Amino acid sequence: MPKLGISIYPSKSSFNEMKNYLDRASALGYRRIFTSMLEVRDSIDETITNFKDIIQYGNTLGFETSIDVNPAVLHEIGINPQDLGFFHDLGVTAVRLDEGFTGHEEALMTQNPYNIKIEINISRGQHYIDMIMDFGANRNNLTGCHNFYPQPYSGLGNDYLLATSAQYKKYQLTTAAFVDTPSGSVGPWPFADLMVTAECERTMDFATQVRFLKATNLIDDIIISSSLVNDKDLKLASEVFNEPTMTLPIIINNSISDLERTIAFEELHQYRGDFSDYMIRSSQPRVKYRNQSIPPKEGPTTFKRGDVIIGNDNFGQYKGELQIVLQPFDNHANYNLIGHVDSTADILIKFLHPWHNFKLRQQD
Image (cartoon, rainbow, N blue to C red; front, side, top):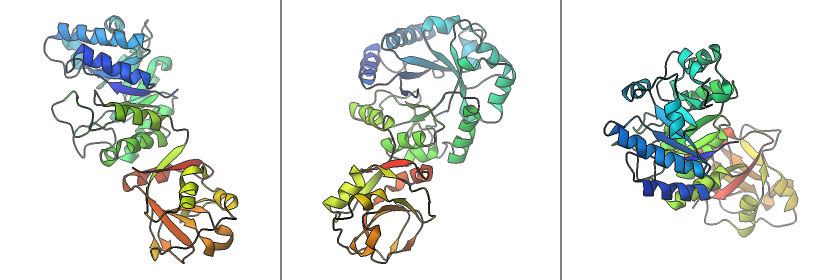
């Protein structure tokens, strides 16, 4: 079952700050914790104690913790990759390998007696996961998680995100990726302009980031990368993560009528199966509202991609049909323009498919 996650950084926050954060997130249904040892350099023994205390507190709340390491970190703290007793004592559910080995070592690690999961860096790409599987990995103890990228323009391209994630879904493995919000006040590194997985997320609002990763159908778990996020954003991510169907944020026109608002935002829409290259059609409203008037309004001469339109009284049997424009076409006074898909959410349109349901939501 997909899980929503938060991040904590014990070398950057006090126990009480993290405890309060876990309490707030747990109450909203969050079930994953991401944490990292990559940035730990000083006072290792003290830091390990800090990790253990908060991880084990998280366990009492039902969280599953993944801890990020690499071969250099393991060497520095004296851990044999084939003996995961150290991580068992910490209380973690998974060890994430930011950098890995040859594939053979990872496969052996999945066969540990503690059933600690080995989480592989999906963003590495190549045929890494295939090599691990070729060495007989225990897939019950194997998952994948993408990187996040604090540097602007360094995030994954969309095609690469989808292709690498698909490599892991081929083996029915759980996948994860990151979203971020400016309200997160703590991160692992000195500089970060949002720590997101895909570069397109950096210009999206927080809710759209979550919707985007869900819409791919290739990412199971979604993790907020920065820590100590405010209550508003924790609640928002939880609400969006649990939306039962794809939801598109719409910026409405001031001229929208009450009936048009009802059609747009209170109906469950279905992408008509006999689809057009020019529009997504939601035809059921024209049946439900066929006896109500939708007076024509002034509009543009040409509709553009992302416009949300409704057939008006001029349109005969098509009155009341809602459409989302996919490519430009002329307006012959049969439609009322009621709004537009938020430009940063335009990418969501490509993940709508014929016969699938969707909802529209007014963008604040």
